[in-house]
Structures are given as structure tokens and as C-alpha cells.
Length: 263
Length: 298
Image 1 (cartoon, rainbow over the protein chains, first blue to last red):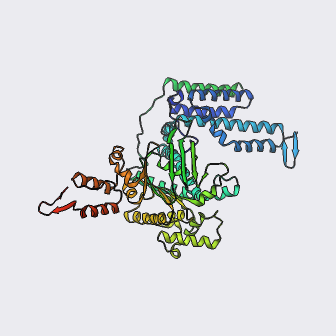
Image 2: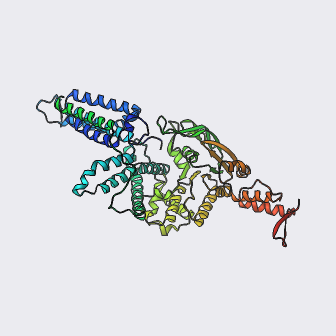
Image 3: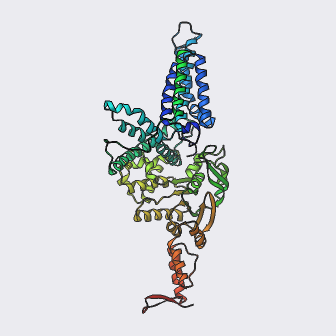
């Protein structure tokens, strides 16, 4: 592994690392609401400032925190252009063939891009400061009330936790198979699109085959250790909300309220 | 010198909390046709060294030169390297993906520019080299083969380019004794035909018996480098590092401890037997049936 895969947990002792994972999860959900509610430049400014504060509290290097944006810039560019050029508007600024650039389109494009970027960075801060185990535990606590309406919360939480645990395993495997196929002459680094497309199959097929094999083995191993879908399962110490966790959620809620009511 | 490393260093994930120095200032020269074994603990940098030579990772500092060219230079054509060098990874059977064995092997020759007839001929040769009948396996699905057969197909994939340099990362892990022996015989045959072999292994016995020269890595540094016999002579140093020592060398030490003037520069079983014959001729070993013990005369 020569570079850190996106979304890897970075151990630390910052305020955000110590915060109850459930508080972080609820905070993220409230933040999502605030992002969706945002529409004015002031609103976005507030959110960006707030993300900056979160970053400072997380102790993560700035470069690492915005890494997911750098990897998806093409995606953002396409979304922006789609909105800017295809927005049906009454008075376009400029038209050519099927394209029509309009003011509303530009604003709409900027809106979508900003919202997505803020959500991605916020999510990235959460997974960088919270270990997969903690996220799953928080997820289980969050869903707990649902078990009263007969939703198998433990099983859903287990599915999520297995999925999360396999991300780094698969990432490592992709890296290994990429290297093996490179030696055999696959051209992953080629600038020619044709070469790249041709080298996709030798990567995807082995990874899938191995993933299914792993899944089978895991299921077997779980059954061998007596796993059954029912019954209460214990996983680590129970955590309770502390003053700072309540504080964090309240601040999030306040920001969301300001967003909806004022800006 | 065909393979030269100049002060090559490699650091994983630089600038993050996961930063770790994997290799530190490695100076190394490897001649054509050598059979080199690399020993060291997990995390000592063995695999990193192989990947540097294979051009899969770029050194953080220093140079890797193959046949006089810096393989990480901007103007270096990687296709040249891919033709010269093959690598067999640990569990190579995981890389199989084609619909037939023949296509699987031909994938490695896709960019070789060879005519179709030559490709077919090479595929046949490679399959036969690992002990397959070409006509029997060519149209089978590689993913439907047994574990051992998959491994053989993957090995054939590395041999089919007829490389000048063959890198092996823990190739015998997970093979049964027979598969292990077969594999090592294939590799030895290649080496006799002039291929440079660089093999990483945890198994000191395998290295002692097959490698001519052994490199010992410890915490990213090249600790020992020399002919197998000489590296294993320093048995105390290897044991102090908790590294394995090949059995013939251990037996030689036991004999010496029993007072028999037995040579200590032993790595393989052949050398051991030759030494036993030599010492016996000089009358260094005699057997007294009454006590059932080995006795000796100086």
C-alpha cells in the first residue's frame, strides 16, 4: 500500500476522536439536513466555516481531509457543466447547438457541487476520526428503536460491519492483483483509454472471484463459531452520552436551525 | 552488472501517521544467471525489495538499474522491462481471470508483438515446462482447476514470456511437499538455462539447498550478503535474529559439537553428503557398534 486509501481510519486523540461515535453520526445527519437547507451564499459560508472548525478539531492534516475532493474533481466538473449547460432557462447567456448557458444553470451547478463537496468532506472527517468498529456500534445504537417494530437491527448492523471491515481487505487485494497483472503486461498507467479499458477485466474478475470465496469462508467460520441471527449479542463496552456529546449534537442542531430559519 | 541498486530506499505512506521505512540505503549488484535467496522476518523489506526490482514501486531515494538503464527514468520504456522480467507472487493463482488456460497464458504475451504461431508455441512450451499436457489443458477454464493446478498455470504465466529475470515471492507457501519439489525443480532448470532467479522465502532449507547466494534483510537493511555457505557459516548471528537456519548446517554444527572435525561452511544436503564422504575417507568418523554411539578420533 503506497498511499492511504480514501476513507481510512487515522488514529488520534483529538476532540473529534474522543467524541461519542453516536454523537458524530447524529451530528452528520443533522449536518446533511443543514446542507440540503442551504441556498444562500451566507448559508454556504457558514457551513464551510463550520467544516473548517471541525477539521481543526479533528487534528487531521488539511491535505488528507480534502483528498477525496482531489480524486473526484472530474465528477464535479461534469456535474457542474451538466447543470450549467442544460438548464432550460428563459434567457440564456449563450447558446450553441444543444447547449445553453444560463444564469440559473450556473447557480444551480454551483449549488449542487458545493453541497456534494461539503457532504463528502464531512463524511470523510467522520470516517477518518472514527474506527470501523465504533461506526458499527454507533449504527446499531442509532437503529435500536427500530427493533420494536420488528426490524432485525443486529443483523443489519452485522451486515454493515462486515461490509466496512472488508473495504481495506479488498483494497489491499486490488493493489496486489494490480501489481501481479502489471508484471504480466497489463497497462493500468497507460494514458490511452483503450489500454486502460482492456486492463480492467484482469483486475475485476480475480477480485470478484476472491471476494465470493472470502464471503463463503467467512460464513462458514461464523457458523462454526456458533453464530445465529437471533439473540442478543454483546459487542464491547456500552458507551453512554456525556456532556460534550450532548453539546456537540446541540451545536449541530443550532447550526441547522440557523440555516433553515435565518439564512 | 545487469541488476544494480544504488542506495535504494523506500518509505510507505510518507507524510501520514502510517509512514514506515521499508528499505533503507540498499546497495546491491546481481549478475546474470545468479540464483539468489532472500531471507528475513515479516516486515524486513523482502517483498518491497522484489517490487523495487520489478519496477512496481518507485524508490523514495536512490536508483534501480537493469542492464544499465534506470528503470524509473522518464524516458525508459516499461515494455522492455516487462519482456525481460517476470514475477510470481505469493498465491499467484488469485490472478487468474481468462476463460481458457491458453488465453490466460497468451495474456502475458499480448504486448510482445510476437506472431500468433510463436505465441502458441511459447504457450505450449510453458505449459509443458510445468508438467501439463498442452492438448489436455489448453481449453479448460483456469478457474475450474484444482488449487495445485491453478498454481501451476499461474507459474506458467510467468514463464511464458521466457524472462531473463524471474522474481519469486514466497512461491512455495501453501504447496504440499511434492508440489514444492516439482516447483523448485522447474525453477532450477530455468536457472541452469541462464535465467536469473531471485527468490524470497521463509524456508531456510529451501534457500540453503537451491540458492547460490543469500541476502539477509533485517529492518529494511541488508545485513548479510554472500554465497549460501558463507552466510550460513555465521549461524550464531542468524539465530540471534531468530532467523531459520538450514538443516544441513545445523547437522554440521551438531557433528562438530560431538568433536568430529566437520567443515562448517555447509548450506545444502549435497554439500553435507560430500563433506561426510570427505571426513569419512580421512577416518574422521568411525562407528563402535557396542555402545551405539558415534565416536571419533582426532
